[in-house]
Image (tube, rainbow, N blue to C red):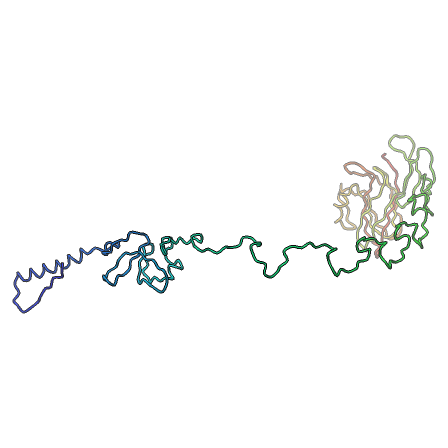
Length: 376
């Protein structure tokens, strides 16, 4: 429908004229709203081609778009503003587009031949060598050779040792001592004179060997009589003594037993373990310097009494057997004698002693006591 014109003039307005004008306005809008947006080439009035190779081009003669098959042979011919079936982009198409495969070449036909983009579909293909023997050796490269030591020219003259590797083939070799090749100690010159023990490794081959005691009498101990036992005074003196136990057979003799502290500062206290008897009668206590000496039935009793001050009596049952204070090297007589014993869980012959140095100087203190064994 052609657009309807509504003419406005100076004529008097009548209802009929106003009604006709509104009707024309509605007709115009109806045509606008009935316009259909094209969804295909056919909607644009362009007849579709018959081949996938066809393109749409502008025909200046008919003044319209037409579908046609294009075959580009060469030159500078161009088809402007082309729309291909495989590409909806509108652009200029040149001969170079077909050659460079910038269009969908899977459906491109050149001179009637379909171009797929495959090298194998090209004509007049060159012959590509697959082996070096198909090439012309214009530079004259070496292709094979048989090279041995014998064939080499200008070789140096080698000495015999170069191929034998033998020391004997060397020239100017040094004169070696016999030991260099024998490796024997006997071939050494200037050897030291070794003592027999160096090669025998035997004790009997030693000189100045000590005399090893074969009897206790070799230790400067006088032999005792039958039934006596070897006792010590605690100071390195040994003797055979007749000791009587609880069996009532014979009477024992008094013995001396003692020990020496480590070096003690003045008023410092140390401990001694004297080897005595399980049960004993104590008669005398001797010190070689001024000291406060305490005897105990166990080590635990000695430890528990460590904080007691000199001059303070121990508590009853504290485990203190006896204590003396000496003013120098002196012997204190215990009158009457003091009964002592070891009260370890398994009774032993150890007598536990605590010694405080009162000599006024740093020194060791030796304590010796006279005992009589009362228990075997």
